[in-house]
Length: 66
Image (cartoon, rainbow, N blue to C red):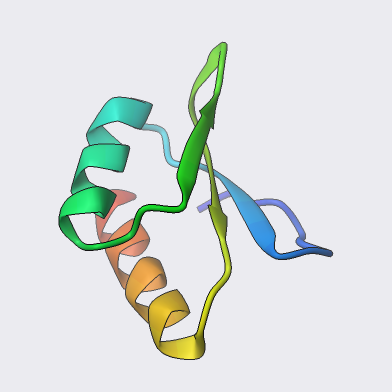
């Protein structure tokens, strides 16, 4: 999955799926630190958290990217 090289506490992803679909799935999984960047409807960002939160976010995003 294409992503930015992060120098901060967030990473941008081109999830190649509509933001609304991705945000709804992440929210159901308890991951809420996501925003979209109009007009780029498939680009999202997620803020890093605790290691276990990052692992869960990585797992869910990886599943969505398939």
